[in-house]
Image 1 (cartoon, rainbow, N blue to C red):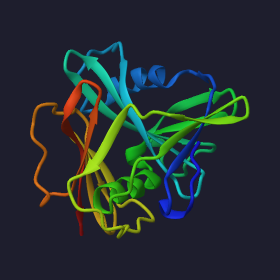
Image 2: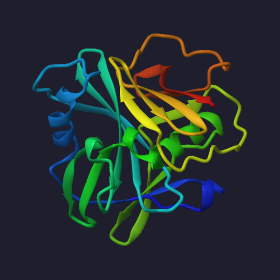
Image 3: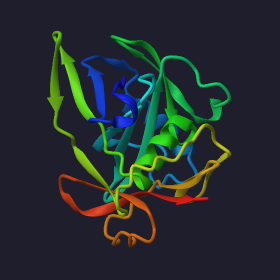
Image 4: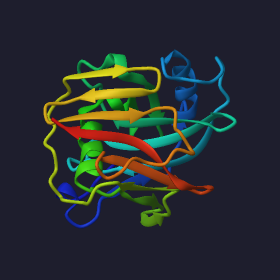
Amino acid sequence: MLRSGSACEDRCMALLHRADLNPTKLELIAGWLPQRRWYPGPAAPQLTRVAAFRFDDPAGEVGIETMLVSVGPEKIVHVPLTYRGAPLPGRDDWLIGTSEHSVLGRRWIYDACGDPVYAAALAGAVLAGTEQAEELVEIDGRLERRAPSMAIASTVEATGDMPVIEGLGGVMDSDLITTIVTAPVILSVMRCLELYIRPPSAAIPSLTCTWSGQSNPVVLAIAFRR
């Protein structure tokens, strides 16, 4: 669950709970991945979580987490998720499943590419330089900072000029990417990550990431203003 100040004026923060999920996120993803057009792994994957980070929802209602998951030797897929306390109307096709959270109750977990809150967060990160959320974990009534397991950066200079995204015009999977069409921006979300290809120049606004053992920036998404 996320919470922060308006438009990340100070720092974006993700307030997390020490809790159990049943089924777990990896269990839900393992059943969902083989149905994806872009999925490159076996029919019954044994998944390993590689790294993750979170975006902030300024409204404090939707959890937004990006997970990188290994599905085989040097095969890493990009699975952004949103967590909601109620179903997202009209987005059943993007529902991965539901899970019981031991603190928050039932959570509806979506492929974030079908969620407009994620599209707004991703566009802000690529085009306006919005940072990933600082993760705070609630433990016995105290908030403790959790070190991020990956870092993100935009290939363009931060401007703070946030695109206003109020809905999605269309979302389409292909063999390698998912394309999210909105009124102000088109987003291309890389699904099967290319670990050894140099990121594009600043002329192509992109979001890159690094994590332990992967110092070469890897492209997560590309954005174009319409």
